[in-house]
Amino acid sequence: MDTIKITPYNLHFKQPAQTSRSILRHRKVYFVEAWNHQSPERRGWGEIAPLDGLSPEGADFHRIMSELAHSTQPVSSLKKLTDYPAVRFGLEAAALDLANGGKRIWFQGGFVHGSKPIAINGLIWMGDKTSMFSQIKEKLKNGYPCLKLKIGGIDFEEEVSLLRFIRSEFSTKDLELRLDANGSFDPNDATEKLKRLSAFDIHSIEQPIAPGQQDTMARLCSENIIPIALDEELIGIKSPLEKEQLLKTIQPHYLIFKPSLIGGIVETDQYIALCKKQKTGWWITSALESNVGLNILAQYCYSLGVDQVQGLGTGKLFTNNIKSPLREEKGLVLANPNGTWAELPS
Image (cartoon, rainbow, N blue to C red):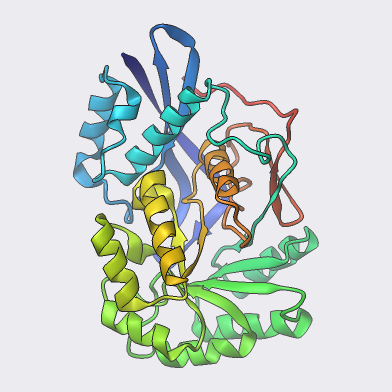
């Protein structure tokens, strides 16, 4: 019999974070602690971090959370909540940590011991041209060889101008550029915009048009102007057959996995197996989790033997993040083997 404790926590952004959908100033997450009555001192941690407007949890979320808080089932048996991906991810993580002794080791390996860092991109939030340029300079100063720019929130011509300036200063050899449109392009002029952006040697663009337009997205991928990565398109796709059909229909260049949004570790593993089968590239990105979720994702990435730059550069976004051994350094995320964890808020 396991006991599960759910603790809500509000993360506060250091600066308002703008996407094409909204401006984020704070972020509510839920920490999970699970333990067995035979060994109450050994506790597994997880994090449930749904994103408003994106997560499929919907109106049932608070009812599910209330039921979890009163559950006495083994935490491993609750991982089947396929309709609630953020919940499933949090419970999977708590079960993994508990099985590994409750030591904040979700996946064994060199990353945990500080010997194997993971390459990450620097994240540039939307804003006016001045603020975005300031962010870019800061990231470059800190040694990031890959930047991901959120676009679609300001005038397109300003974004083009900003990219033109970046490329005038840094070649493809010196700086890899990834873009994330968050589905903001109109399908009618998406091709033209991609052609304009292709002048700047873009590595890839995430979700140029809104999800649910598979034929149009397939056409954009087939035009091969800029390699296209699916992100929001994966949300709500549950069965292995649906996953396979999505990849066959759209034939994207890359998939981007946010386990909190697509069903946790098990569902992500299914996608990765399909990507290997169809020779589709992929990487993992955080969904603005706290350092708890970020540590889980980093350890998971290492266990997969990743060699692609990952989207895990979000640990410094919040003023009140949970202290952990994780740190970012010159475009890498790594664990300090002598680092300590803060207690979870009660």
